[in-house]
Length: 322
Image (cartoon, rainbow, N blue to C red; front, top):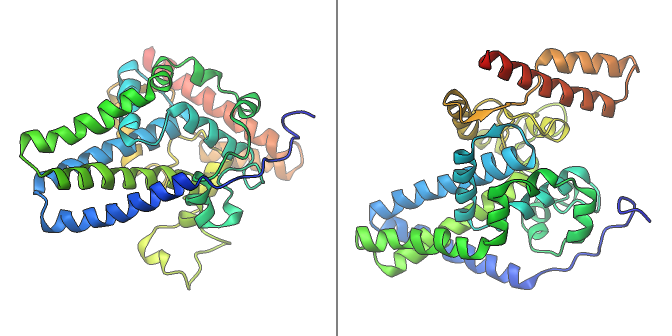
């Protein structure tokens, strides 16, 4: 039986992970109270900045750059995003990319590790605390990871993840409040340590579960959903699962705006980013017209969009070089 046709493995709950994340979130909530009552304001600001940088490593780095190859980046930017991802403390980029690509390949099936059909709690939390739907080695047979395996920075992080995380994710970040503005050990560990990890863990999970929050269900926003007052829902999350390589498509329901997209635009102007892959409205209209006329299948149309995005990126790069 081919790897593609093998049934999904029966998943088992990793209770150690469940207990860790329960304690992490409980202590994180307590850290929020400390942030408002006893912590120094420099600690709060420093933790917020460090958390934001970590989130860039997750969204712009692991998701858009490495998982979907939405753009190319210079060595210095890739190094920065790799270190930012390490600071986040969510495991190696290699493993994250492997299971996110598995999520896209088997979307909505039993092999999908974050299956949206099983609800938000499963997609966001339980899917990350259970054994894989596909063995690690089996997953590498069905998911093309050659581009990731050839990336020097991803290889270094994979080989030395725990020493790097210990230094860049724990020792150095916690030393700053203690050494530079004499923050107490309790506030430092709880706020700069555990609260930060609780936030980055949820951002990491939201990349895979965001569809359930930011996607419009049906043809319009449900009038009885209070989320419309707090969250800007759109069809862009559904678009992402059809056209995952589009760099403009944000992780949380945005398109062409948001912090991640804004920074990609800046890095592009600084020539730190190139080969921005996206599709124009005309590309999509043309593809849908051909599909509606039954000239091509939808899958063939998606492949045409992929080829068109590569062509646009290459053409723009040549024009700039010229």
